[in-house]
Image (cartoon, rainbow, N blue to C red; front, side):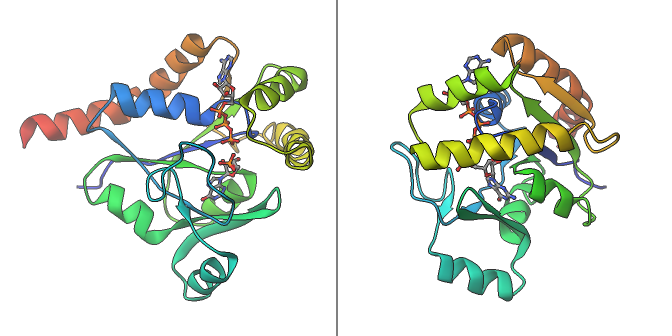
Length: 199
Ligand SMILES: Nc1ncnc2c1ncn2[C@@H]1O[C@H](COP(=O)(O)OP(=O)(O)OP(=O)(O)O)[C@@H](O)[C@H]1O
Ligand SMILES: Nc1nc2c(ncn2[C@@H]2O[C@H](COP(=O)(O)O)[C@@H](O)[C@H]2O)c(=O)[nH]1
């Protein structure tokens, strides 16, 4: 039997993707698994290598990509990011719903594969609120922040493309946004629960 469909979470940096997916992983323990991406950016305080990201050098990442080890990769805000085949396989081997947190270039590249995920775009209510969230998070230099805000404007426009996303969630009130996300994923969640019950 085919496993559950993966979930792609995309949307501007600071819109709340990680916040929402962490809630999902916590509430639905044993249902979802996170696809741990590779990145060349430096870890933020509290981030763990192998859990939040595989933190690697540009050389290591480029070599792995050249060897065909990645499903997709992108340059974002001055750093490389990518989803390895192993990251997705590690989650799917456990029959879990694989969650990918990726940027718009990643979405476009995943569309060319046979992964067949549910595409979710998470957006902030406005650019001003997005900027406030990013500034309050205190993870970015002014340069990185400006790059992310520029990418966010492009993201907001592209995400209007009909059919690109199965759902666009405006993350204003966190609990309301989380409720919408769960509604979209209910069918896949039930599939995993049914399989777990019968095994
Ligand atoms: N609904 C919300 N209301 C207010 N603050 C929020 C809401 N959702 C998330 N935040 C806060 O906004 C900040 C950005 O959220 P988060 O880090 O989840 O964004 P992200 O989309 O994962 O960003 P990135 O792509 O850079 O990883 C965090 O400090 C988070 O606590
Ligand atoms: N195309 C990909 N984009 C990715 C991947 N992992 C994360 N991301 C996106 O990068 C930005 C910035 O992330 P941050 O952790 O530095 O704030 C964000 O939009 C992520 O969705 C990936 O493997 N491929």
